[in-house]
Image (cartoon, rainbow, N blue to C red; front, side, top):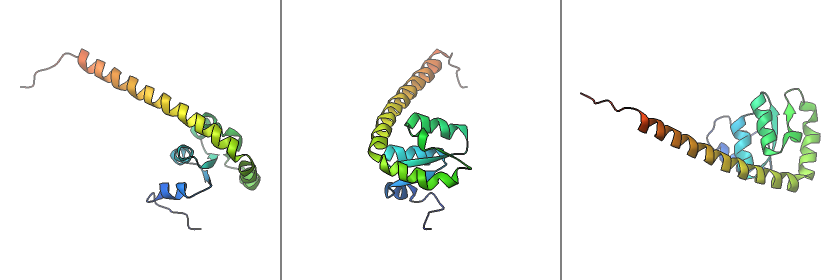
Length: 122
């Protein structure tokens, strides 16, 4: 099928795609960040949650839903402008939240390090 098995060039493959069908969290996230339409396959709760956060939960399939893939694909193509805009807004919001969380974590670590009594190394 021409689908790469290794991670070498996977971002290039995602960028070159119109729609990605994926079950791995970071592939779904990367595709959404790039602006590629995505049909998540929910093999675990974190994928369902990500689909909700990205606003694409109505396009999320369960592992046993493979018979619905073609109709889901067609519906996603019909609604692609709306889905792209919704995902773009959600990705921007998630990016801001991630930056805030990272900044807060760095501050907490720095504060913890600065409050700790320093030991002398002999």
